[in-house]
Length: 541
Image 1: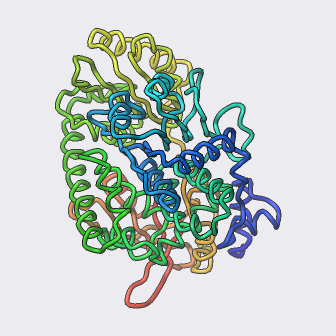
Image 2: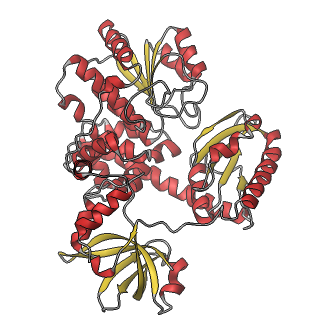
């Protein structure tokens, strides 16, 4: 029987974490991996310009995005720069009137408001025309971003580790990570105390986890320190949000499924400015008020999402290999979430197309692991007025005349792909390694917790266990969607198991009374001050 330390070492090796030094750094509660911000292309020029404009008394506007990464990026850079100047404002675009990224009408308003320097966070790399417009008006521009750059890029001081010419050691920073590195470079140049910057690591943790970038290298360092700050309750506003959504101790999973959705909800259903007001609140009354606004937005988002999902499912015939749904009544802010849920439930790529409000159509899509949606749709970019995204998600606008040609082209291409690869829609059973039932223990659970924070490229470990019995099952939840049961091995040992949201999928096999194999993640449950191992069932077969 392997000891927990042996199992952890194997898990780390599977994630290409090797050698005593690298393993110690990965597991350390105080990791040291960090890179010189001046290694980022154009950082020197960006710092010089910003400090020069501060010295001149120029009004600075920070232009963000309406998601959690954009919101936290604004909070980081504005919060830091306020230690150097009061002549500072920010702009969060509206999903409904501005759309994603830089917008000429917004730029004009920012200029008319007196801004002479525009700094973007989490957007702007490919906004060539918009940046040119800002500069024509007389503004100076610094773009900080982390999104991929194809052929066109903004002609200004551009700080983005994904630029081909950039030799920064780590390419996968989130937008908030790039904003933090800019602030770090300014701190170094001004010889400010480290505390003036590190106090914003809680925002970096939230934005980095929310944007689903890899939790490795420098990201892992920043997120670990940031989560520690959150759990030490160093920022009143974040603590009020955590309390408001019943979070006692915040793990990365709580950010992904609790904090981030509440930030994103106000951007989807109203204005992301409400989240900025929460995080910048200095008094408890404002923080409590803003927390309630985020909670109500999330409740509304869930209601709209569930209703739209039910209506969309009614349109699915069941044999589509690429689901394209045209709806004129879906709230613009939840189309992507609904497409994502359909993708998950049907294991098929899904695009939802809605009116864009100007006589055109807007599409938002989500894809499965085996189909690169950006690559798939790029073949039809002549049908789009605008198009962008990545492997898992894409968005576009187009004329109504392009709708039928697009639908036909999609179905033709997916048919060809399926014929050439019959396993295109096979669902792989993912797990890290096999273990024996007797290797499960509280010690293993606590050893695994040292691998936190979990997230992209560092998922919570999954284990395969063969030939066990699942007994004493009972349904939980308002709709019986969850299940609790016991796992017994041949020696009669028993471990509690919990199954979330898939009780109906596995009820028959669990209640069959036959030996099964399971894929589980290992956690703990505390009841009446007694802590024991609890397995989370991920698959049963």
